[in-house]
Length: 412
View 1 (tube, rainbow, N blue to C red):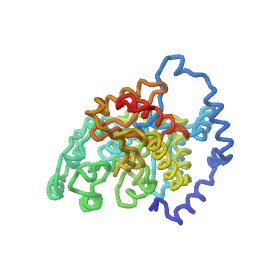
View 2: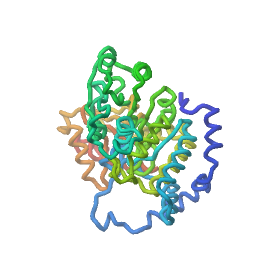
View 3: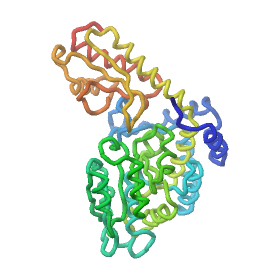
View 4: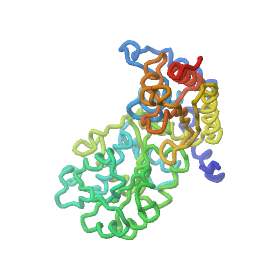
């Protein structure tokens, strides 16, 4: 069921991760726990500022600061912060290491997934031509059209438009074939919208290959499953983008761009620290590059099946806390794409309780401790457990029970 990493690939990963940075997390759980305790005892700037904190039962939303970095990642970042390096050299060598780990041609640590989209587009439009790089988003004399399915339009394609390109929307395979011309620089695919469009992965990549047009897959939040780190490059996408601070548990302002060596090298030239480039604002520092690499190593070595079982257990513990509430039903489910991990859906008779899910979410937010649940309340209250600390599912269970018990008149 969990065939995310084949036996051969697991063996390769164990070998590959045995490099210099492996020591960052080789000390074991007890060392990590001690380090986490030291980090928690540090100065509480958030408390000084009066910034509200909460239990994350929502998931990896950027607005809610997505995920927490493991102590091993923080330790590696702290170690990197004490020394000077040439940023270009670090980008290159970290990219080579990541490409080795993910069995792809090349890789680049970016300033989040949105940055990866901008740099990928710049690479396809301006390439490694210095004069063109300096002129973006002025695309005069360059290929400046990006073909994509209408169903794949989203708020994040602004990162593609940053390069001055025009988005050409299509709906069918025939329309896509007809839309490709001498001005087509790239084809863009939004991974979590695969089912919404009429052109699937294989057809999309096939069209790109047939016409010699680079294809980019935005798979920002699509880890797990872990095999996605390999799947899309093996499928034939020329470029694939991931968020670093979601399922990978890396720095929030980091991401990954994977794919063809020539395009990754061009993306690097369109990126910081190159001053006169569209990506100069997309600065990634040495700490984030190192942190992203270590987070990736940890993710690859994780026992994904055991982690999945733990997420399921957390859902069941919250279910148990709500089991005796009259009229309340629960369901464990896994979203099809994006944040594809166990979630718990909670429903009740909204009319009888005079409480709709959005109101319940607001009341949970105001409790002590506050709880943030997944946005979108069309089909009940949805609880994500995978970004919680161990034991926090019991807190969430108590808080949800308290809110619903008050509303439906049940004893808590």
